[in-house]
Image (cartoon, rainbow, N blue to C red; front, top):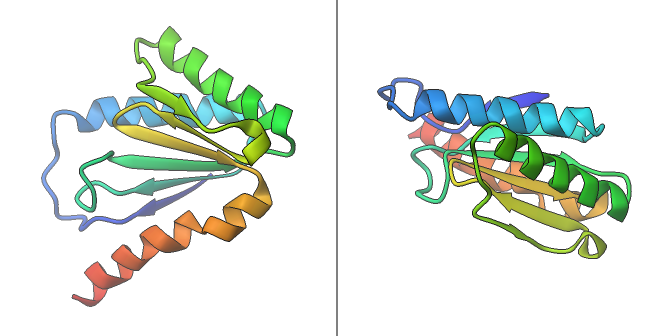
Length: 131
């Protein structure tokens, strides 16, 4: 599990930070339970209003992608969180689970490499560090 921060560490703690941390832990555990591959957490708080964290994981087959997404939704629900939506098809190689504060991208390795979300969001990290 790799975690990347994309925000200035001096930001003030928000009351929702504990909820986000808890949800992130639930999501990563759900992915690990079903053997998600190369799980990465990216802190995008302050870079986008869409979400605070992005969790990116790979699966080994279309069935594996679906199982990972289903487990994230079930474990979130069991802990009092509901998915705002699940988008994409396992056959397309990418499923997105929107849990508001945490958005989960579950992708086949080739799809993940092509879209390179980690690189996309790390550009903002370099800009902040250089600025």
